[in-house]
Length: 195
Image (cartoon, rainbow, N blue to C red):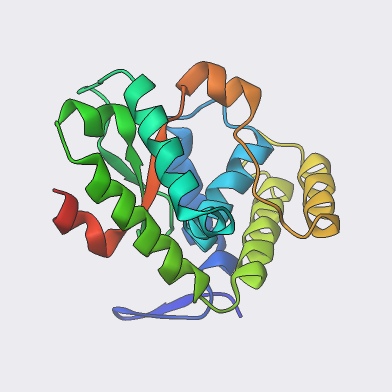
């Protein structure tokens, strides 16, 4: 079922709502013009699963990787501290360069990332939501509401995802070159603890 709004209530699956997914993607295209199909998928993946994939490795490995990346990243106070990666704003990317410029506690961020992963692991229907998001993205491309992407390429990528059981992916090479992404995912409810 797609999502509909009844007054201030939402009914259905937001990942099936063309209007919500369109608005969500446009908000990201404004800052990330060079996003490729795999970057859109990564955005959906993170919005659906949060940071659940970090629980596949050990927590100590996650913490070591975060500390190492945080040490290497340069402060950037001009960068936004966070951005939403979920159509309803449930999951946020915390940008490490901006976070570092605020002299914030990296251990606290690490803990909140782990809590976010634990919450995401308990979510039901995540693969179905990811499939719905990719389906909605395909329909938006096919109808030319999002003309940037070839619908046949989107469909081909979606088939690859199905064959590979919707794996986590890295950002595209162009995304890395253009935007140098360094961030971690945190549930929106934890923002008051961080800031």
